[in-house]
Length: 291
View: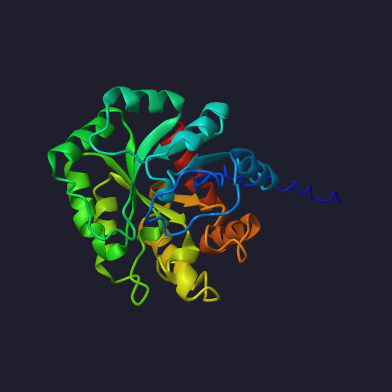
């Protein structure tokens, strides 16, 4: 009797995630900082330092975020973009209304958006003012996006004028939801409404900052991942990978002694355990920032 021929199982290609770090910073200790800077690093973290970390962990591209403590001093970021045009993009902090020629030169250098760094602000800017309406129209005309960093309870008053202006919005650090009730707070509701309108993306970044913008000082040994795990699971189910981005927030200012690139990548894997979903998030980032 001729033995039955057993066909080999088809080969299944492994899921290779295009790892894109959508939130990192570069700076040196001699940079000018704002008088009200919430902290002032005493060390350098250069683009070469970041790229070395990326290469060690097979991260292909990164997006540099304007540094809140340096205000409009985007020089260091822009020089890094010029030296690494294939792998880096950036968002700049600018003062409204900003000059068209300045923004166009920034675009040529690799800037793809502006950062509204509003966390810890005593008073929010009037985004309906003429200067901001000019800036937001210029952002829209350049096909840039607005990167928003603000506490969750203030998100509604920030998102409404941004969406009315027709700009794309990327929300930093899970939207900083209320630590006491992250899934049911007004910030989460506003963020999800914005995503449903189709012009908003959410960054799974800085999960260690979710206990609060002052937790690095007030509770330096507290839980770094619990809230982020809860929120990430919800966002993956509710929002999906086509509206999510991942960022390391390297070099983890305020948490340098507790975090490393390995650890934040491990957190991402726990937040999004399915490799195919992580790959989709990477593809979303490549298309959004580098497409």
